[in-house]
Length: 451
RNA sequence: GGUCCCAUCGUCUAGCCCGGUUAGGACGCCGGCCUCUCACGUCGGUAGCAGGGGUUCAAAUCCCCUUGGGACCGCCA
Image 1 (tube, rainbow, N blue to C red):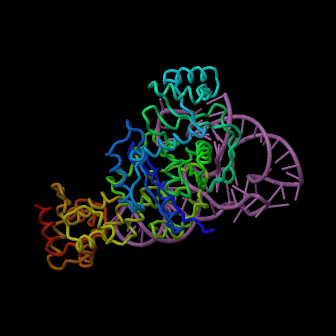
Image 2 (image 1 turned 45 degrees about the horizontal axis):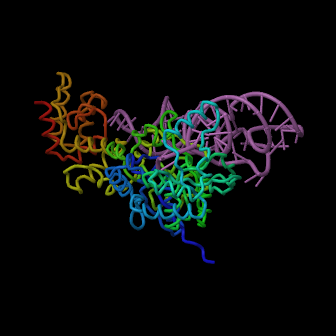
Image 3 (image 1 turned 135 degrees about the vertical axis):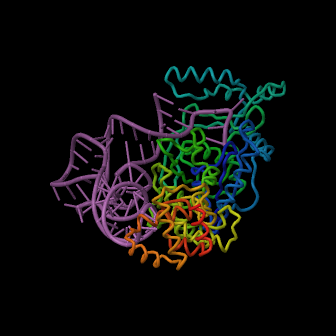
């Protein structure tokens, strides 16, 4: 028997923007596939017509590409595979694994409320499971609306989770669940199982929120006679204050789109998310290639890590200050020619945590102060002195010598010069700014500051 | 109400399976050095086994209970 090729997938529903919780799932799937010479697939779970939108689909593609998480093959859209799901549902009914259910939404809701009020676990009581196939057929042909429910059965389902080991779940007593809706759309459970099966997915790596769903899906797979994949449930990432980054919570703060606008490098986002919950001695910048070599699912923790902006900024700063300038330059939006930009970036990058800050510094150095400067008399005197010295010889050492003679201290003079040249008292070393600007520009800015 | 997952510095974690460590590292924070300054770098410091019972000479580690956090129980995914 030959070993099956590893196939993983990322399957978001296009009902919102991708956030770093999603990205972590995508990244782990991506890395695992790459490490095993397998394939990483992308699927859109868009069976909920109400909430899905094309805009979100495009956003997902864009974010994934921007991050460098390229998927293999085309994108599977569940909304394009409706016939397939209906066919499978029909087969399940035929074989007795599923049955038509004629209960109305109102009925079910009332029942559910009643159960909750009595302190019972909510669940379907299975009344339609006792309708005979012939009666069901008759009601359907009369045009009565129905859903298709899967017979969950009893007992217990055991499976192995890559991260948590052997797990065992007792099946709920009233657990028959809908696999096909009245409108003919499949529900999540059916669609996942069918798609994973058809695509030959070998490893289902997803959020921990799916852990309790897994027994149902395994039963479905078994009923269909498919191969049960290996499961790996990642702890849900939490953001800021006790909030899970999940579809129901506000996770806008960590959406890829917003982070990109804030000036994060895609590589930094990937590193930040990779380190999260991973016991590694590696530190950023690492990058995708390095991650493929070093990452290991078994080194992931099982408790929910908290993602903070501090962490993101620290990783981004590591990239900005340590990565190749030629790489950073690609993400800086400016009209400055690349060669020049590289020089500028080398000088100012240690003062920047984000690309936006970097851009501000680049502009400050290249263009000069963006607002008219105001110096008091005392300060003007000092600047005049500097100008006069530099007319003779433009260098820091010449200036220092002259300052010594006149009894001026560096900390009284240097910040003033920096202010005159780039509009900030604190910042990159003056000597580097000087050599970057050149004598003419320096003198012209000094004159302008004194005007 | 039921089922399940989780619990070590502020944060990410090592150690737990196979009891004996000054409970280690990283980020953050604080301080020193470097420096005109901020930052970078570097050196140092701060701080933690959720609680309670057991078992044992010895418990972060094994067992039980409690507490806390989380997920799911939908014609959402």
